[in-house]
Length: 398
Image 1 (spheres, rainbow, N blue to C red):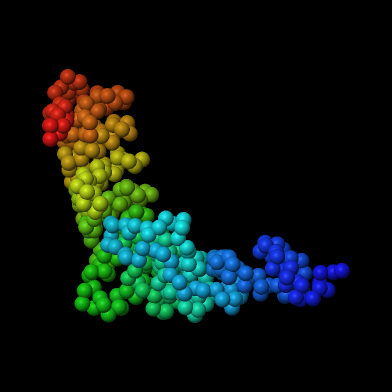
Image 2 (cartoon, rainbow, N blue to C red):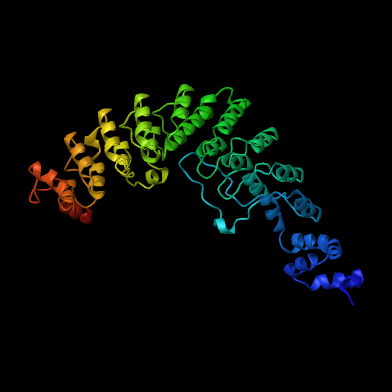
């Protein structure tokens, strides 16, 4: 007797006894079985499997699947358990729970993949337009980050909030700028300027967003974008209060071809002696700021270090304040850079963590670096002015 000839009541009893995977395989065996049990399969997914198929429909952009799930009673009106208090730049908001335990909302997955129709369906069913993912990004921020311009426009027209910040304290404009989506970033900046809240204090956010855009342009080495933003009022020496570097520092550290980008910033008036600001956590805990805070320090970590250091020194960089760059030169075995800094007045007696610079350099396996120290009359017997042993004793007594 064929299974197709069984009464529908018996077929339903069979379906109740099958696992979801087996039921799905049974549906694919014949079109009649598909028509008989497909709605029940969606019902099971919604009421017994936590609507897991919603994530598939949102990720791969299947409006038909989404509609069936919604008709079966899937709920999309909930908000994810993300730490909802956004914080200023430099103070990363903590996770309420571990990311692996956070439940991703379908609207976030649809936004990442640019599915406009899916987003529209979810919004019609009551999904929150400003729902955040585990990194604190709203659908608008995710669309901007992934370059989905049509979706960005749709969300803006649907009154998505542009003021929301992610865990790093950055808005959707910065997300677009970080990936080089300049058209989206400029569009969002114009829309942000139209908000009535900024009619009295436009500099508070508009200017800060332009500065973030300049920072990302510096990191990517986009010279035309840098010139464009500076012409629009961006300050080449600006940095935020906490955990921030100047655009010049960002270019030195991250630009793919840093020499030309650094030269451009210096020609635009960038100051090579501005240090990066330490993070809030380091200030609150009384810790010392990180060592690599000057452009000269960061230049030492690049393959083009000699050209970068020479360019910075010619533009007024203070070698005397860049003692840590000498430690990096010894560490990376870069004698040419070491000599260049010493010739410009770098301090050979700079204090390190456990020993002074000249002691550290004399122990270097690089003979050229050792010779530079010896040429200046410094030997292993030269007294250490930093007196590490005496300082350690004082700390123990206190």
